[in-house]
Length: 206
Image (cartoon, rainbow, N blue to C red; front, side):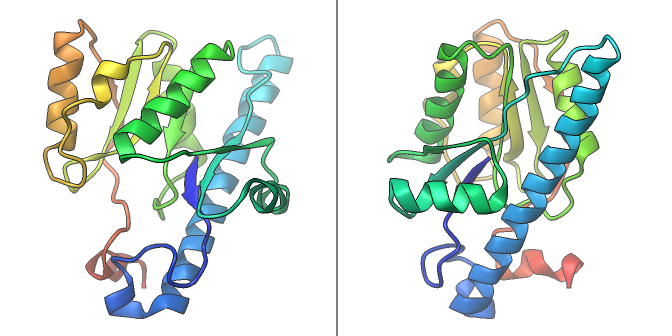
């Protein structure tokens, strides 16, 4: 999971005009906890399947943090119950996603699935479906209702998928699909989900 430290005035800036800094930070904290709880549940299912002769043991839950220093990030990770904390690093969203996918692949992961911390409807089954898709596809994407994607996963590093994207626009998914086509990849697509970025996005969850 890529997540920013939920400090007032330091996260979810697009929510601030509608709800204020403190509330925006509280929303960020709650969404981060929710997403990691879904990931932890998905891991429990996969580990249980591995124990019964299936695949999925050894799944690592990693928090790619931003907005605080290394020692504070490690403390935050311990509070959240993740296996490891790494730095997101600087740059665009695409560069930060690319960095985490590359890191996982370099470390020998058979598959890497990346999500953000803005998914109020995320369930463990969504993540399980992503890993299932990667058993037969090299790339999986979760389309977002705003034209982006809420999940990306792969079995190998694909830096070309993060270059030339109009991040933050409603063209992100379409542009990514075109880049995947050019790279000879046929991505598996998950169910569409809503992320939470602006005050209007809060309406279904109030």
